[in-house]
Image 1 (cartoon, one colour):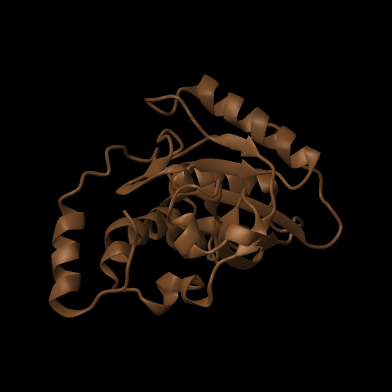
Image 2 (cartoon, rainbow, N blue to C red):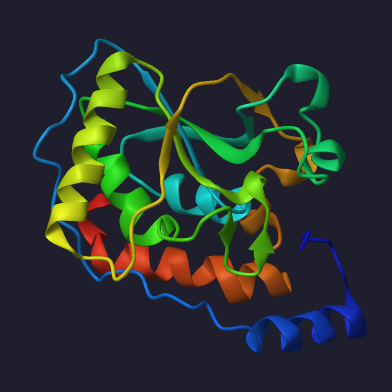
Length: 218
């Protein structure tokens, strides 16, 4: 299912439909902090994460202290097909993703992953999130360094052993370039807070972030 901008009666009809769809899984109320984390790099660092619709992912991570910017985009495919129309065909190998520029002296990579798994998405859904279906909605961590890949592997193993999720974690650790999405997809929740999709699927993630990790919120 692709997300579209609607207004008036059409928007109301979509909202009624979305409210009728079960989320099928509740996020854990808390997750343990990673036992293994990265060192503290000098200057800014970059993280690229994919967890379904980039609108909600962006909205969650841009609210974290220590995060300088968040960009919605596509990761895992080529530049030639990194457009919303082409990625929507589910044939380009891209995932909807976000690029996070953060200050590792204020927030660690492991903490970003903790938020990623706890409130930003459901890591037990394979090639989907909520009402959206297809590999572009997969759960994936695009490690930018070997150290990030190691932290991610250790944390997935830690969460699996903790049995905080009722189903297996299907998050992949991948490599690939990140390509920014079109301007209309940037800061989408901030610009369209009453969009039916935002209200049903993404606003609850932001609310959960504020409830579970208040100390991390700007």
